[in-house]
Length: 138
Image 1 (cartoon, rainbow, N blue to C red):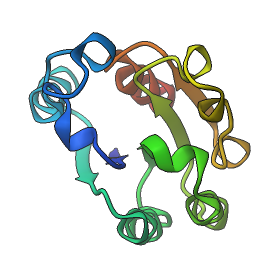
Image 2 (spheres, rainbow, N blue to C red):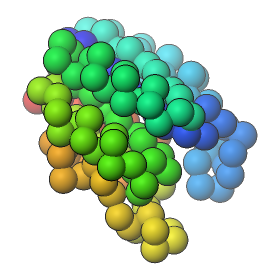
Image 3 (cartoon, rainbow, N blue to C red):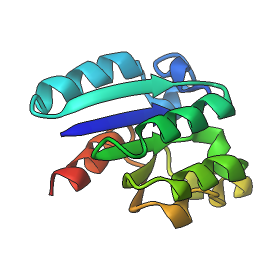
Image 4 (tube, helix red, strand yellow):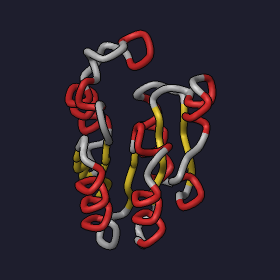
């Protein structure tokens, strides 16, 4: 099974950025833990702070892999383009967020992605990615 995790802006700062919200673990360390825990899953990872690169990656994987776990971060609330890219592909997508976006600023309550995905997981820290992965495993 091939699953790709796509992370958006500022998630490269996990482990450093606002640890009270996002924790102290880097995504690379967490990804290593996921690969150990799920050895039968071929996990790919991509992170970008650039909207167009995220769209390109969704299109690249959107017809050939078994699932995409997408945390578009702040672009969730602003990017019609990312929402359209998710709508245009055949691969199922699970939208994840580390924090509970509904307990934060009002602008974070809107998602341009949610209406085009298999499901949405918010507020469980990095465990949100693991929960999304389970959704593809049946």
